[in-house]
Amino acid sequence: MVIAPTLVPTKAGDRVKTDRRDAERLASSFRAGELTPVWVPDAAHEALRDLVRAREAAKQDQLRARHRLGKYLLRHGKRPAQQMRAWTQNYLDWIKGKVTFDQRSQQVTLEDYLNEVEHAGVRIARLEKAIDEAVEQAPESMRELIQALQALRGVAKVGAVTIVAEVGTLTRFEHPRQLMGYSGAVSSEHSSGGKIRRGGITKTGNAHLRRVIVEAAWSQRYKPVLSVLMRKRQEGLSAEVQEIASKARHRLHSRYMRLLGKGKTKQEVVTAVAREMLGFIWAIGVSVERAQAQRVKGAA
Image 1 (tube, rainbow, N blue to C red):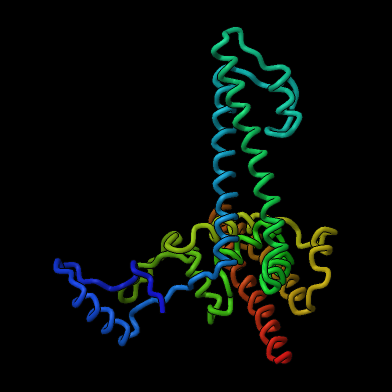
Image 2 (image 1 turned 180 degrees about the vertical axis):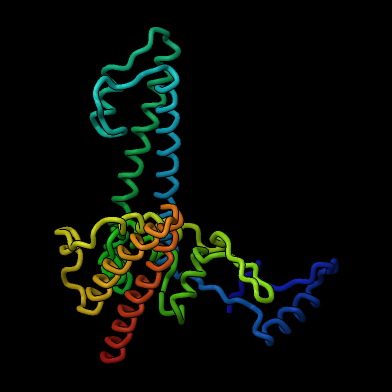
């Protein structure tokens, strides 16, 4: 059993550390059930996780490059004459063809910032292609779970791959609340006696998983209709998975609108919806993994 080192209980005033004392403390804490085991990813999960995190780093670099270029144009009063969305192909063509500077140094700066933005886009496209190839070569159990998670609205291929790579097997969580706590999306609490005080989310979980879920939760603000793309994603999935996805689509949208009607901010509403969305992810994962276990047991 592998134990999380940061969750091993220690005394605040203990200033003596030896191997013998560490072994005794670990043994007594393990006997008392105070140690928290961690999931050790296998080679397939770890390789996929490294690739997904590389894409996430590339997206962060792209955002910083866009900010540099956008602030540079704003500082010099360079704006398009007609309305256009930022960072579309038309926007980049406008920068290349219409934006010029009299000073050579400023023109070189513009070209360097623009090259960084384009390089980041090429880098992301290359990593996304590598993710597609990695999913095709992944074990069948992982591919099946990735396909099933895409039945949820807001969870595309990259999001589903991130969830599988970061969480691993979902059946290791006995209850969806454990998965919510693993993501760090649960509210902090400082209660005593008859007073209950809850604050913002703890953020003491997997930040990569939390980011993907919060991004997916923003799509729940739209009406719960089954689009053509979603219908295509659900082709070939079991009836149980499709039923869970349908329930999630309606419930999460109604919860979003209900919380918004109570005067909550959009950030608070999305966080609450993301936390509940993890419950549906857990349900789909458990359904798929149990079906896989039954097939293996039947074949044996």
